[in-house]
Length: 193
Image 1 (cartoon, rainbow, N blue to C red):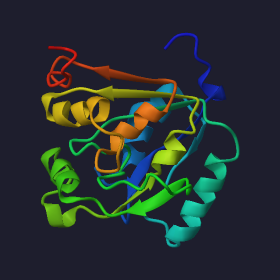
Image 2 (cartoon, one colour):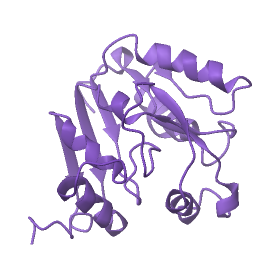
Image 3 (cartoon, rainbow, N blue to C red):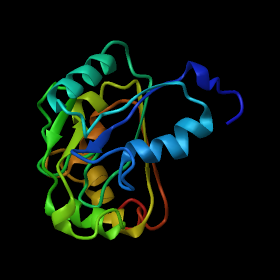
Image 4 (cartoon, helix red, strand yellow):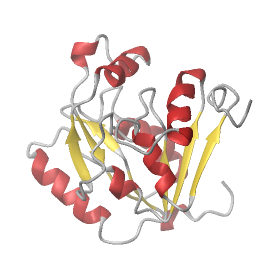
């Protein structure tokens, strides 16, 4: 990406599994380090340490770092169950806490197994997630949502009621959100047909 001074970028990540090390194949820290941080040369980044000895302290520390200055841009996706970050149905739309510990619902755990991160549903742990209200505090939000598996959640996000049972629907409350869809993920939208 020409023209971006990556030394000026400060990054936070959305979510991490509780109890898994950065070396685990499902670790979002591992993925971000390998696919973004090292390749772009970002030197200022803050991770949710899901395997910290004192998880509450680790969450407090990264929360304080996150809220110390405005966030310019948030990159999110939408899960097969409509989650943003790991805010599964019924998402907590009320908490002001920057990061929260969440129990993943069965659909989300099945998605993690289906994507090959865990051998079976019993191995998928709880997670730490940036809260919906914290995500909405970013000046701009960009969501990239490909694949047929996401068509129903996309429909609920864009055409259904804004409600905790369709967590991504909260993105409609943000004045500067852009959602990129492909033909498959947009296939159920009534305005497309």
